[in-house]
Amino acid sequence: MDVYTTKAGAVRGRRTARDRGIVAVRGLPYAAPPFGDLRFRAPRSAEPWDGVRDCPAFGPVAPQSAELPGAPVWSPGDEDILTLNIWTPADGPGDLPVLVWIHGGAYVFGSSAQPDFDGTALAGRGLVVVTLNSRIGFEGFGHLPDDRGPGGPAPDGSGAPFPDNRGLLDQIAALEWVRDNISAFGGSPDRVTLAGQSSGAGSVACLTVADRARGLFRRAVLHSAVNAFATVEQAARTTAEVAEAAGVPATRAGLLAAPPEDLVAAADRVRARYAQDPGSGQRHYDPAIYGPVADGVLLTADPLEALAAGAGGTVELLVCHTTEEYWLLDAVGSSAKVTTEEQLAAFAADFGLPAALVEGHRELLPDAPVLDVYLSLYSGLLFAEYSTRLAEAHALAGGRAFLARFDRRRDHTGRRVRAWHCADVPFAFGNLHEESVHFLVGGPPGAADQELSGRMTRAWADFAAHGDPGWDALDGPAGSGAAVRVWRTAEERQGVQQEHGRGAAGGLRDLWRTAGLPLLAP
Image 1 (cartoon, one colour):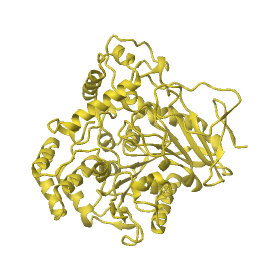
Image 2 (image 1 turned 45 degrees about the horizontal axis):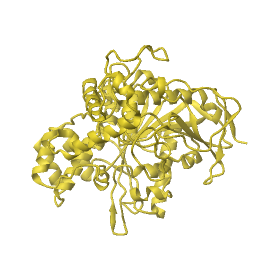
Image 3 (image 1 turned 120 degrees about the horizontal axis):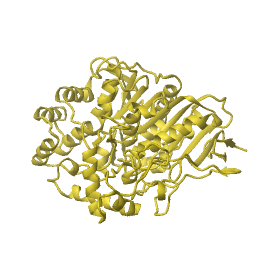
Image 4 (image 1 turned 60 degrees about the horizontal axis):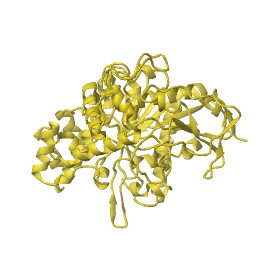
């Protein structure tokens, strides 16, 4: 019987159908439900239980309006949302490296129950895999004004009744749970790697530079980290917009009285207004409105600035981005269409992009339509260049950092699938067989895809175990002689190879390096 004893009580897992040598424990609470008296507060420890708690299914997802393939949806009344899931070898030797995964979703959607994040294959590589849910949207990242609404001391005695960055605090609570309990599942609390993609990678970047998370993990994997970080003033303006859309005062009392579903719907209306208004500035193009806040408590600066100042310490980084990030957002219709020269000029002006950067993209994409020039610019602005600079900043500050690019494409049933945002995740998790990811990767996988996936899961496992994914760490700016691993199938230039600034990707790096990178607010 696969029973494990945690500090809160015993839990029972199930052998996975895919690999009977792997046990999955799902929906295990790491903190109390953050509602009622605990709403908008720092996470509090889960209540202990008697007997053996059966854990066969994922826990409820955090409040959101998204309906994702293969994953559960949120319903009002679902409150026990701070849960995690564990995959571990049934007969493992113990003291195994641990990989803790934070999902993406623009800080407003997603969950650990998405089929792409199943940990069976990585556990088969000798890891204990942990995935988690944390608060998102207003519940996790909305700023509560400092007024005379209800407050009082926080339940944990921190003195901050309604802190910013509650989603990050949840993730820290999950890491503390891992520190205190993972040995019961065969994992080593001293060998933890924190990993995430998109806003999940943004969270990982924040925790890498946060003193509060120091010592909870020794390595970090960041795929497509998002360039989005707010000041308190910017977060307060978002609160005012959401409160107005919800029809409540922008006060603590007003926001506490608004049900979670009302704030979710209000945020959707705010985002829709930006999407429909070409004159609304940066948020028109990708209306994400929430993100980590420089509150001066948990976070004092953007992670890029903090890493450059040495705040990453001895944490080792493995950073990856895809080469055509933003094409996915266009394909699913979640970003503005820029198809004319006038629209492209407005986009460049809204983000303060120099003319030389735009013209340089035209030269590297000589036959591309305006839309592709825009998507290439936005790919670098929001994901690729920011991710690359995180790795470079850490390396130049004396840290150890590895950099990779995912460059696998596929033509399938008349549709071209690019090396776009999210496509790398099912490869790294070893979950190409899941039907829900076939849109991302272009249908059922072939042998070359499976071989590439095997190399990527091995790189993650080796990095988590030994700090060596299989190529050289950065010793200078990427594209100037530093090694960058390029993930391709064997049918695409014979698979993985070292790239030294050649080709379009290297050319785009040169353009961004001379143009600078504006830091964006959600």
